[in-house]
Structures are given as structure tokens and as C-alpha cells.
Image (cartoon, rainbow, N blue to C red):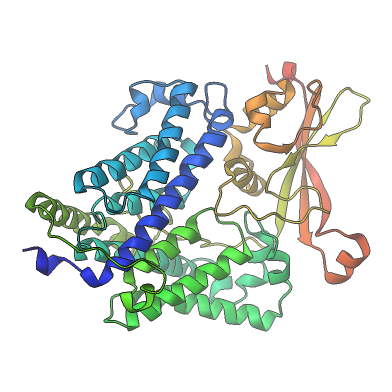
Length: 470
């Protein structure tokens, strides 16, 4: 029975996918470990205990409904980090050990995402969970890769790419007139060190980039299901495109996971040069075959909702249709902002003191600072600050708490920032201004040494004290 659902020639593809997903988990758990206290801890900006008090287990399945403390959450993150490292080296473990390890990783990360609130509302969180769940059923290196699971991984890649292509074509007109990249590199959430160079490329090349993007996301996904070597060629196009995106911006582990999924469609004739030789492959027990077929049926049923979303007139991006984050719909940049705004937060020690800026780790602040390379790591507060500049409504659940934390010099929140201008004692006042940012031209860069040129637009938050917040 196993012969007709196994794909021994895809052993190298399975090896690449599993190891890259394990690194994705490592990034996710490390990000949570380093940031959860300031964002979600008991004294964080949106504390998990408050969320658990108003949302039942059925609404957000999570281990934290059983117990929550900052120490327990840190323990969960550490178990996830260690488990991710083990997943990189247990290729030849017994089948039940393999399944148990990957299942634990999925349950732990699901528990974090489902209480992560606005900080975990990004599509790549659901993408990691869906890919990680399918990895449970890929099996260890001693078992031939199951064909249905490889197809499901390819189907997941199809939804990521085709969904993103559709939302662009249906959304902002700049994708249809090929002018989107006149703005995108400058106004994207978190530019990288090469984004300014990409922005100042000739506009003709920008139009070529948009045309290539449409081809990669609207045509190439169908070729992923073609016979070899066409499927491998299509997967390589995805890899090259995602690599281009990684160079031009910081999109956490979205590009990393998309490249990971592309390996599921690659034949061994290409990957055998970069993966070890396979061990003797054995047939799995009947219960594992039954589990693979059951999961396949479940995902076929779950595919109804993302298909309906992609084919419908009101397509939405990055939505999970269930609390387990399986069978999701994906997409990115259905609209492109034309002007970049930044919220710059400042503090003052007294009414007649100097106003000093708070610097964030990734988002633009000091015009003379080169945009850093952050991805595939994810700076959650920095991303939310980009949304905040678009509309203050994005900060309604956490911005007042951020201001209060700065006025108290709360350590866990300040660790989310690059620089605290008041290391000795907290400021008396905190305020925020809205600035317009644009990339410096080559001449401006030579003259001023700045990467950004900014101009003040107006007040965003008036000067506030702790008494004002109370």
C-alpha cells in the first residue's frame, strides 16, 4: 500500500524542507523568548493574563489557559528553542520520536500565536504553523517521503504565491500600471540596507520587476504541479524571486518559509548535490499510512475556504479560517502607500529640558543611520509602529501602555528599543511627532551623510505625564 503513496526520489527535498522549517521554528521561538515580556508579559503592553481572562480556550486554544506566568512562558519558549535544534539532528530517529518532537513544536508555537494578539497577527505566523504541522507527517529519514504530504506542501506554496498575486492584481492600481515599485522600496514596513539602492534603480527596471512579480505569482504556481523538470524550474524561479525580496527588504521569515516550501517541488537530480546520500528506506507501519491519508483528506476539505476566498470578489489577505491555523489564505501588499510617515517618540526630563528621541532597533529614526538587516528575525514592535503611522487606530490597544512604560522606564519594554535616552531616571514628559521620510538622493547622501531626508508633519501625541495618563 505504501508504494503508491511514497516518493523515494524526493528524499533530498524532504531533507531540505524539514531542516528549513526547523530553522523557522528556531526563529519563531527565539523571537518570542526575547520579546514576549515587553509585549505580552504580566507587565507588558498587552498582557496575556488579561487576554486569557476574556477569551475562552475554544476561542484561542493554548496551553496558557491551563497556567500562565512569565516564567512559564519563558520555559515554553526555551523548550521550543531546544526542540527546534533537536529537529535539525534527529533525521534517523524512530518514527514515533520524530512525530512526537514535531507535534510538540507545533503545539507550543500554536499556544504562543493564539495568545499573541496584535503582535502575532502576521501571515507568516500562520504559515509557519501550517508548514510545521505538515512536517509532522513527512517522517524521518529512514522512511520514504509520503507523496500526499509533499503535494500538500506544494499546494501551500501555491496559496502563498497565487494569493499574493491575485490580491495585487485586484487591489492597488499601481500593480496594474506597473508603477508599484516607484514607491514600495521606500514605503515598505521596514527597509533593509539595500532598499535605498533598489529604490533609485531606473523606473523602467521597476516596471520590469513588477511584470516579473506578476509572472512569478500568477503563472509559475501552476507549473509547480507539472512533471519534472518543469516543477523544479518553477520552484527555482520562486527561490530567486524570494531571494530578491530578502535583499530589498525585511519581511521576517516570510521569504525564508516561501523558499522552504519551494524545495518540496524540487527533484533529487538537483538537490542531491547539496544533501547527504539517503539511508536505506523502509516501509512505515500501517497506522502512519492511515494518518497521512487522513491528514490529506482533512486538508482537501480545509482547502474549500482559501479557494473560495481567492476566487471570490472580496479576497482578503492572511486570514486563518480556524483556530488551529490550518488551511489559511495568504497575500501581501494589496495596497502600496505612496508616502512614508514615521512616528518619532521623544522624552524630556523637565518642562524646560531638551527633547530626546527614542531609537528603535529596526524602523527608521535617525536619518543618518543605515537601515539594518533584520530578517529573517522579526521585530514586532517596529512593525506595529509602521502601521501606527498609517492610522492611530492600530495602536489603540497598546500605545497608551507604551507611553506609560517609557514614563516609568520599565526595563522589559525598554529592551525592545535600540536606545533609551534616559538611562538614569525616567523622563517627566513623553510626546510623539509625525514625520515624512524619503530616501536621500545620491547627491544628498554625499552632501549630508544621511540615508533619509525627513520633514515634520505635525503632532502625533501631545506632551504627557503619568498623571495625564491616569
